[in-house]
Length: 98
Image 1: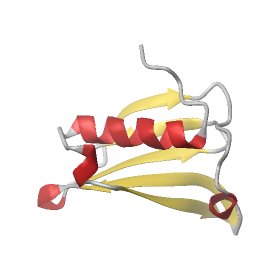
Image 2: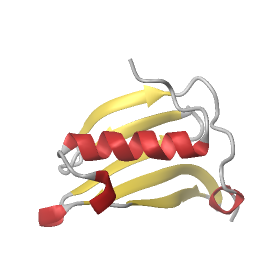
Image 3: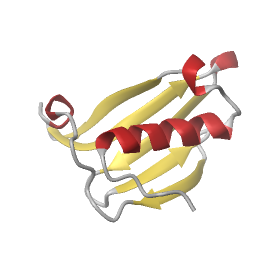
Image 4: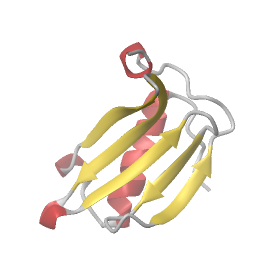
């Protein structure tokens, strides 16, 4: 069983690895894009997106209210979810502030 991410860097690495594994992509060749998700001008989550060959787009959404990460394949179907026991440490302020 994989260790549960406890820092922001561990969370990013975990999400990047999971998304790359889904389509057998090499992580070094496909960088992860990260964007804050807003609801009523408040950050409510973070979208992780990976763009692969042949217009493949894989995403993961980290929802702040439930502290879970939902993984979606290139068709938009959820294929996995994890619940984090603790809120990750060392999250960049610019991501959580508007």
